[in-house]
Amino acid sequence: MKGNGKYYIALNGEVHEVSREVYQAYYQGKRKEKYIYEQDQAHENHILDISGMEELEVESNCCMASARPSIDDLLIAKELHSHLHQCLQLLPEADRELIQAIYFSGETESSYAKMIGLTQPGVSKRHKKILEKLRKIMNNL
Image (tube, rainbow, N blue to C red):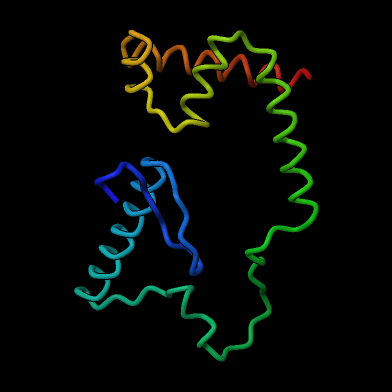
C-alpha cells in the first residue's frame, strides 16, 4: 500500500504489516518467479514446481524437511537472540543507534546517513566496522 506508507503481505491467509524493504524484496521475488515461469512456458521447458509435488503420486526414499522448525532450532534461535542483544549492549551508543536504525527500524544506509548528516559511503564503512566489532564480541563472550 503506497498512500499511507504502510506495507502489507498476505501469507498463509493472514495479512502482516512489514517494512518497505521487506515488501519490496518479497514482491521482487514474486516477479522473478513469475518471469521464470513465463520463460519456462515460452521455451517449453518444464521445471519441477515444488508446490505441485503433493499432486504427484510417486514413492520416494528421500524426505523433505518440515517447514516447521524443531524445538531445538527454536531454543538455539532464542539463545542466539539473547546473546546478540547482550553483545549489542557492549557497543558504544552511536554504534547501537546505527544497528538499531538499519536492522530494527528498517532504515536504509542512505536514509540513516541523511538523518545524521553523513554520506552513505561513510555510513556503509562505519556499518561494516561495527558488524566486525560485534562479530568479535559475540565470538569472545
